[in-house]
Length: 78
Length: 240
Image 1 (tube, rainbow over the protein chains, first blue to last red):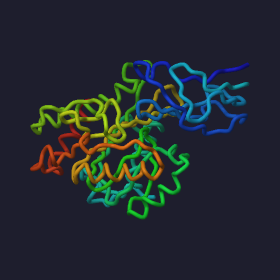
Image 2 (image 1 turned 120 degrees about the horizontal axis):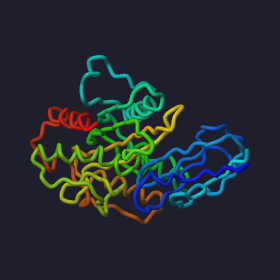
Image 3 (image 1 turned 60 degrees about the vertical axis):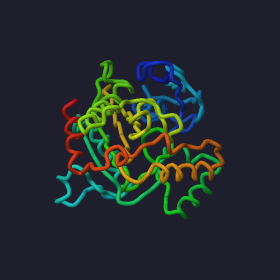
Image 4 (image 1 turned 90 degrees about the horizontal axis):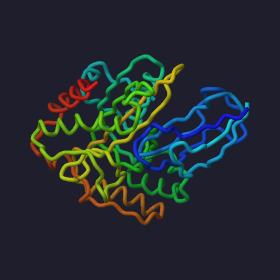
């Protein structure tokens, strides 16, 4: 089963773009639910993103890539 | 790294740690919310030393090692912070206020704009109470680390703001740290020149303008800041 990790839809108003500032785990790593996996910055705010479920992480957006609300940045294969 | 001040200083509204210890104290404030130990925290500090502070992602810039050496030789070491934005000088001429809160997901309080207004609106009210009638929130084109929620005086940046969000352990709530750095002393030229030196060292053509900044001493030259600061902190507490 695949679970997507997405940029939150309700964190900010408007359509400002965000950027992936850091991946804290490697592509292909096994992560546990709740593990901190990435940081996204928008409007001078750093937002920490956790793994919603346990599984093998597949990164879809690299560091410094621009993302928007709802963008899938990674997938977790349980 | 210790952030525990001497006992006599603990009750003072304005703490005076090193830049590194001040940043660590802000991180501890956020973590106390994440651990469920508290739902509100407030910290005011002004550093005893100086550093150019930026998010860690700047470390990936090609010219960063040389820039770090060049600034260290000028007496401005580079340190990293956990909030977003771009390089900002920290020195005894800067007063920082950090506010940490627990936010319920799904409520109106769980987004960035609310967080900035939660810090910035009481700050503008405090300035108004001191006689500054034209303070507001907004961008200051030409300023370093510009954003949409600076505290401005006549359009010039007085306080830069930034945030960090982290999940509260074991639930869906979020912990928010919103930070404001207010230039109180020196002239904007001094700090802007330093940031521009970093820009040159990393071969970034963007330069910043002193005219886009203002120091509190320019707006309120006779202000006794140590005496006035508690009123700002009270406004930030009352707004909870």
